[in-house]
Length: 81
Image 1: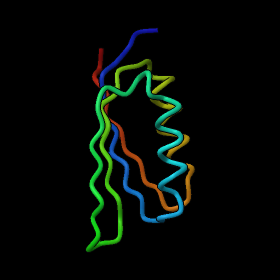
Image 2: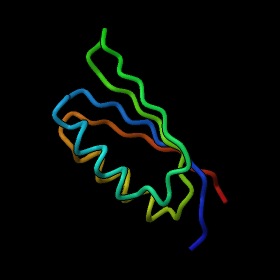
Image 3: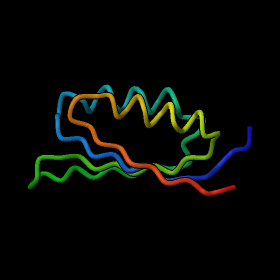
C-alpha cells in the first residue's frame, strides 16, 4: 500500500482523555513525523496537530482510535498520492 503524508488535528475537551490520547499517539509513533500541542487554558481545551507519513489504513486507525475517546474530535487531511 502506498504511503501518504497528512495532517491530523485533534481537539480534546475532556481532560480525562488527554493521557489516553497520548498513549494512542505513542502506539503510532512510527508514522508521526512531528507534533505540536497547545493547552488553550482560557477555553479549557487542548489542541494537538500531528504530521503523519503512513498508509491510509495506518492513519485511519490512528484517527479512528483517537476519535472514539470521550470529548475528542479529530479531522485529517491527506495527500492524494
